[in-house]
Image (tube, rainbow, N blue to C red; front, side, top):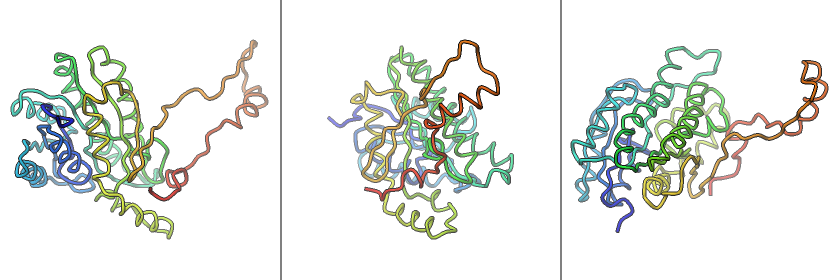
Length: 303
């Protein structure tokens, strides 16, 4: 039996790139798929129903079952319509892949409030809306899987992506909260940080030789490399996996840690600003985490 036989999977942002690859592999593994894509450009502007319908046609022409939904995940009504599409077409929903997103990069002190709100609205609020819309059905049936897309920008850091990084760090907190709140109902929630060449990556500035070389290396990492892990996390084979943060880069799979306590100090008499400077700082300094960007930390060539 195929890994997702009999299951209904919702994939947001599935008209292109990583989302498309996930939708196609879910269908290949036996799932009936809701292909959601608003059809916006790489900066979130505009709308186009064609990408979602093209993926549906591709799945159906291969003998699979799929329906298109072109609502925006950034609206509560749109998120509910995505889950309603699954229920109307297939009678149930078993997994949600929160992949939709776009970039509006800018150095922090120049970032517009509009660009902040737009990116937070899709990447973080959109994850909440779609997961929340599915939650009552997951609870009722006593099962469900959520896979939310985070990023190394939120987990590690990158220059010029304060809005995106904050949203993607927030996605990890949201996923952890869902995993804790919903485990009594058999619902799992995990995150995946993908590294692959997509139209969003193609918008990243390459103004130095090092950045140009990194982007050239990214071109070797196709979106289809991300799909197998996501399909696994949507399946019953991953029934013991929840609250985790994974990364995928070509043929590498990473398991990230969530923040944890590194050092602790206690003074019976309490702390003063001066004792923080004189005692706490020297003791904890060796355990401070270095301030590195993603390319500095993940510096080896893709494997």
